[in-house]
Length: 210
Image (cartoon, one colour):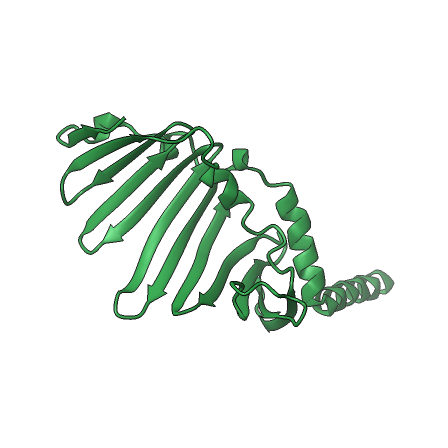
């Protein structure tokens, strides 16, 4: 009986500790976790841009090392772009065409930038827990008075996974555009996923602009 009571007390203490975490503590732990994630781990996410009249444009982004693939839906058609350190390939399903271009040597690695996009994301913001579920924390980030960056959105909504402290989504409204990054996952991308394979498009017209 004593062991049972001790077990119940331990569980209660652990639960109370978890519930007592502040939004800033959660974000700090997320920052610690993300500091150990690099481009070699690979990342997958969906980026949505919601604009008046135009509607929502969704882009599926895969990155690994210095490579990246982006799939953009255009109605019934798709625009797919593969990028590495020196070359960019774009397949337009509407034209059934692949366009190949050079990348400048000093162009920043978009894949690396994607992996670092959560670095210090809440700097200049006051954070609070807006909602909590058994699996997630939903955190509201409000721009504080010390933040003088005009382009920073007034509010952002961040979702962090319990247990891993990994960010799951980030949403913000910039001017008239609402930008959402969701379905974030790490360590799930392979080299094949981010490498252009001409054999996959045997009938496509090739336009080489290099």
